[in-house]
Picture 1 (tube, rainbow over the protein chains, first blue to last red):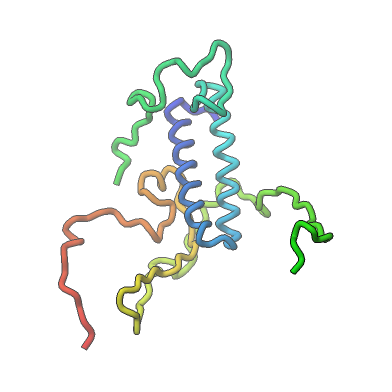
Picture 2 (picture 1 turned 180 degrees about the vertical axis):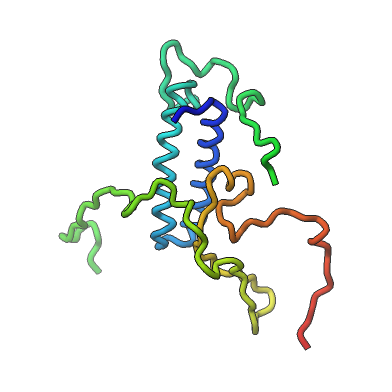
Length: 93
Length: 95
């Protein structure tokens, strides 16, 4: 799988959003096996995408993210900068 | 009453294992189950000043990117804001 930085970040963001939504569902449906299976599959995929992203483009957070030398976190853009984020332009409903 | 700490019974050590019996690469690609949308139900004989929320049943899930765009991964919860359709209506009463 070869994705651009924006594509990779978009997929990671989307899968993390899915995790949040499934978590909310599981909070009220803790015995739903189908939902739990989807949650675990998404959690695994999120981990994979995050590792892939950080290997290619540097740390996503200032902690719990590995960094190559020299320390990458100080590099621009930071995640809250506009340029850091992908566009969903034209895709919103 | 026996305190738990003093009890001889030991809980078996649970092995940590995420629940993924037959993991499919993209479980959200499955189609909708029949009759899972809409899930709204008619409520009768309800108490005043009590809120009722129908219990959601898992139907299928949208793809992650589609979910991000629509604001929910559950097709039964997709509810885009359409101003004109949400105008204040007088309450309708049964006879």
